[in-house]
Length: 614
Image (cartoon, rainbow, N blue to C red; front, side):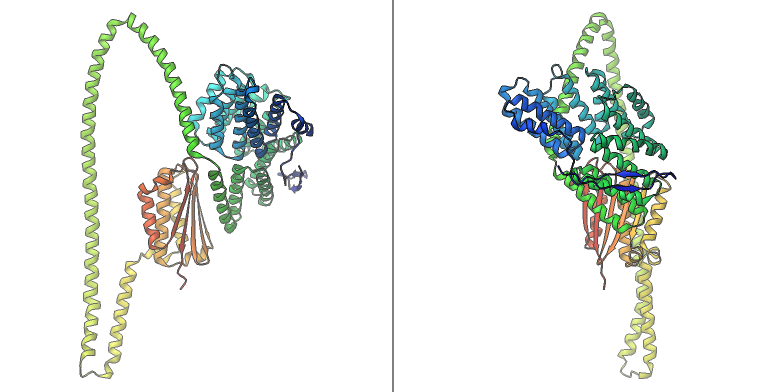
């Protein structure tokens, strides 16, 4: 393949004069020897052909080229199926093809497809005859769960691989995965000692890429612990070795980490050039998850540079990449496979526990029959006590429910009384002041002996009536929204929230002057919409970061609300009162609402409201 190299020079982290060199790839480089492709083309022996495809695929796994990994994974599977009758260990090679496909799908960011491949591999790899492949698939499945943030699913699988895998390389890889697991959960005090211990156990010739990946993770821990110089020293070494050994995916990940260090020390120009280079590489290699990571870092960088317009457009691009990932995955089929796999695992565990339980019960019954009678009496009393407790709990719940109903009635009554008092006050104002003035004006105008000299007096009464109507309308509008810009009010509201929560909330209006100039009714509705979104997010999303972007563009106002929380099923939002209220407000404003979310993937809410420029 043609290789296009783009050399970019950066300023050093400290005051030394050393310069770093970074490389982007116009096309994914292919360092695999041509003799393998020649042998693949010329061989007629199906077994030899399968072995060559397998070798090429694993070379691409080392290089990190997701498209080639997936291509040769499919090629291997189809070739084995075609010659299945001629191959004694065809299941083993089909299992290998699913392992290769799972690696490629994960590298591209198609997590559900990767999970499907490994579950298929597990199903055709008996632990008794394919111990290594079985635990390889198990471990890769745990890695997919980690990417999906389903940590409760990942940890038991990793621990099982460490305990039961016979192959020493699988055990080492499982221990590294355990350290990665702790790093994903930001439990670095647990992860770091495991990484350091693995560096002593890895074979430099056999585990070269694993050593560099472990060094990279240690560098990330240094970066997070604000040890930027130590982190950059590690990254520079890893970058050069990864490039020299054709570990291009590792090279790209390392360069991205270096960009994060530059961003952290506020060297935004160097960071921007690195992220741009990383983005070119992510496009060349079709790594969608990497594209998302780079776009997110560029968005943060433009926010820091107060370039909100570019930040907003990048968020739109982020959404497009997320949608592309979702479109490329067959979630329903994968979910069905996952349920079947988990059910099978549970059935095996239940069967094992049942066997142990029966053996224990038999011995227990033989030796302790008198105690069983006592236990029966005890359990009978316990059952009666549980029923009494349940009855008491039901009575307590009914009392609490009654009190809540009373409180709701009280609030409703108070609200109605307040509304009634306000109506009576407005009625008195209209009747006593405006009504009296209008009646007087009517009498004067209807008088047949109308005197032209009284015109100024009538005009004064009309003017007075106008001011009364104006005062009443102004009293009905909130003084807070009349006297302040909406951006100022939202920023003040966010500041109050952040004083009592750990969530990081950013608010970016652009251009702020135009946003503050919108009319008062729209200000109030917009404030209440953001208030509702924040309330829902803080109550349900479990997010650590919330970003709000507001953009006044031509004749519309655009609002983008994003969090990195647990997400939800979009089909169920109609059950939520908060989203119903938001939709009602937007219906009155002729606004549009778009929600992009899925379980464990965060939430993006996009709102567009037309502005009346007349």
